[in-house]
Image 1 (cartoon, rainbow, N blue to C red):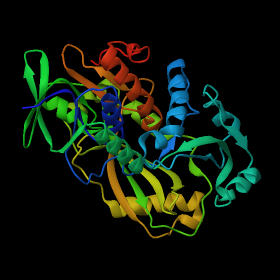
Image 2: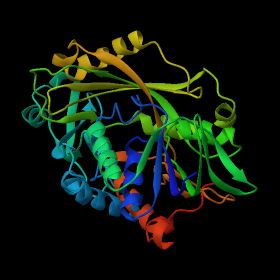
Image 3: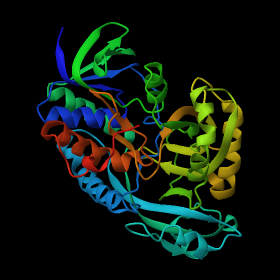
Image 4: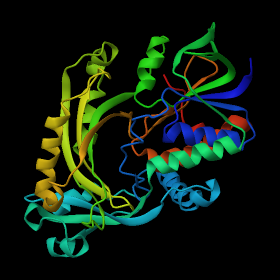
Length: 388
């Protein structure tokens, strides 16, 4: 039986980036993914990289590092990421005070600029001028999340990493030390295991009597074929309801619902937005529900109709375009502090998940994590407390 330095569980963007960075340090790394053709949050990501948005010294540094890493990543990985810069257009609903909305972004590394309705339509002609009181706009990074993940995986394999498609069923444990994992096919030993399984990280660890402050939403987007209608920007709402409902469902009085998952809808929102990829296809979204049972799949016909109804108000030319609705789970934690590092009171087990802006934070944090894994210290990772 081969013994690895690190086992990484989950091959989405976070696991792929981390496995690559660990292998680049010369470590023997096994990356495990449960499905060959996954349908996770990486697959349905808008691809936006909010490197302008850091509002604390830590997140500002990570955003600056993210911009540097991603602008050079395609060359480094010798693979396609489709990195580019484009305008982010944050729509302010008609009837809202633009100055009040703008104040929510004052602490950002690069605060967005306000544009009047007339200026907004000049920047993005597909917007409905009757639905907005103006927009906020800022230069925004963008990648194709699926292609970037594949580029990370290919580079990881070239470095000698091992990728296996095997569901992880359990952890190997000796007293208070995790020594590896048990999959559907094999048992793998390692001095260190890191869980990067997104929303499924919580249920997997709870099955091993490990509780973590990780949560998830059920999210739906519409994926279209390539279209001739050209959207110049990434369009999203300026008032993000998602952050509010995520804060509400993380309150202590809600914890029992997460400990004993059920099908009750704790909260649901629709935040109309759109992105067009370089091949002309779109993602239109998005609808989100907080339901603690991860196995639930909402009525996609209904969710598609609701998304299209909201898109019709902001981007009416896109509302009836052909497309299909898709569902995934999106993990989240405290937005100011993703779950990165050791899990308290256990040896050999780590977490790398819960990113509010994974495409901005995961690449630099993966690099810092790999430095910490080999040198025992890192100025960024050392700021994260053990995960309780």
